[in-house]
Image (cartoon, rainbow, N blue to C red; front, side, top):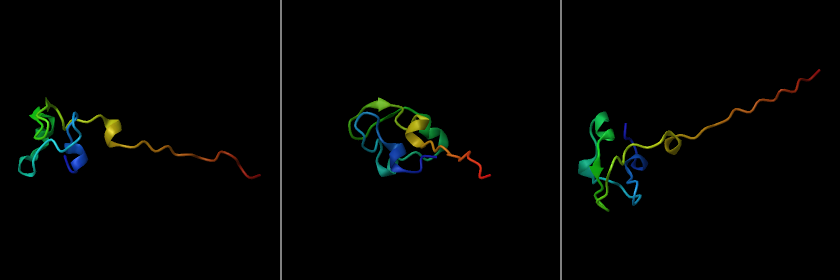
Length: 67
């Protein structure tokens, strides 16, 4: 779900692509093409690549054994 402001940012100007009253309501609204309320760019602003939304955490294990 589009839960935070970072997911509502415009690809072009980096500001919120919608006004508070125009926030997407349904899950499917996130994949629709919309016009940015600030710079007027028409795009799929709410679709973000996974690496922009999630941080990869590597688990480091110690393979040395005490003998």
